[in-house]
Image 1 (spheres, rainbow, N blue to C red):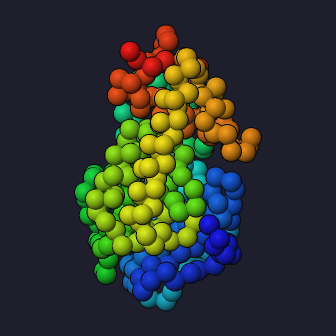
Image 2 (tube, one colour; image 1 turned 120 degrees about the vertical axis):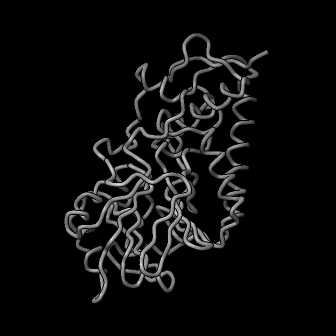
Length: 301
């Protein structure tokens, strides 16, 4: 995307009651940094306070205008670039923290089994200390003086991932981003759930989406169609490579991700593993031996 990178800490008005403050944590995985959103004109809702950063905390608090108070804090998911500042911001403002649940909540059965046999996250930065004050169920609504947010459970990038709907706008966290496809890394990332969540958001036909990183997504349906098609194309490439014989996720990554920088090959390998687990669930491939991140996978007859 050829978007001008915003200055960290700068308050940008995106619409009448939605403002954005970008955290000072740019990286290849976070683009220009984590987007923190402030919603409302009196009782303010904060979506994704961001990383543990004193500078970002000050920027959020400085965005509060006379006559306004932060009354609600919402977290889309518990990665370290989204959730750690929630508890500090809560201490500063007295606002409760709302989320689907603690880290590990929402994992599918297969991902729970993989975690139990030792599959760990690959350094994506899960905030294992995160615990919300209030757990939100799928479809539950929370209101302020001039806003109502509906919680949509959209697992895939992480099991406890929520999106939040405000009218025809959806705050989609890291499920959908306009500048790149989202990382899906087992056992916390689940491609089966990811595809279902993308299709769910598509059915809503939102007019606008605000992601956890990057610029507003002004054509959400087109973006979701691209993400779904992109994943289906990756699946087809993996199946084609497996016709040459059983292979590990690491080997398949070298065959499929031919244009990916070496620095991102680790993340790409986790994406391929997510595809293989999804295909295993569909009965299309099977591991040679135990299901884990080192297994060789083969096409089912």
